[in-house]
Image 1 (cartoon, one colour):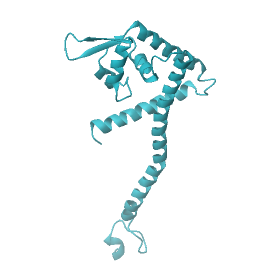
Image 2 (cartoon, rainbow, N blue to C red):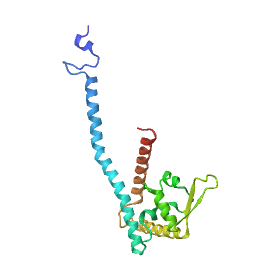
Image 3 (spheres, one colour):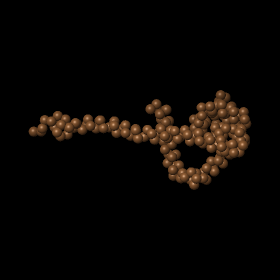
Image 4 (cartoon, rainbow, N blue to C red):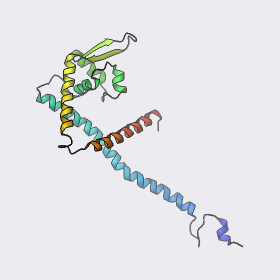
Amino acid sequence: MRNRASSTNKYSNHKGRQPMKTLAKVAEPAERQARFDHIQPLYLESLTLVERLHRRLLDVIKDEFDRRGRADINAVQALLLFNIGDKELTAGELRSRGYYLGSNVSYNLKKLVEMGFLDHQRSRVDRRSVRIKLTQKGADVRQIVVGLYEKHVRTVEQVGGIQAHEFAELNKALQRLERFWTDQILYRL
């Protein structure tokens, strides 16, 4: 006949030790917390870097326009013109496609129209909707940004020390992070 102690709990170890099932439950939260403690500083650093990189990009664009003696447009507006490119869009499409990274898109669009960088027309289909596109003056600004980026492409490996495969990995990780944040919003996770 079997020993009474071993028959009372099928998860028991020998000699009065804690049941294994209970130990597993205690260990799991500690292991999960250790994983969170490990990723938290990396996640927070990434958030800081993404924000800082966007501001630094604006500084680089501003510097390029300053070198050319162009004080008629700011870096945010120049980047907006670059992102519009040869497309004809609405302000809503600019935001939804991720072409604009600011809260004051309407203000900047209005200023760009007033300064002659953008042309705007009411949609024939929906009179409430305004479609925008670059004027020649706007296309000239866009070309300055294109030239700046082309210069970066020619020097980023040698001067910046960043290889193509590193950009591929970075882009993959940033796309996954974007998808994660989108899911947080869509599914209220």
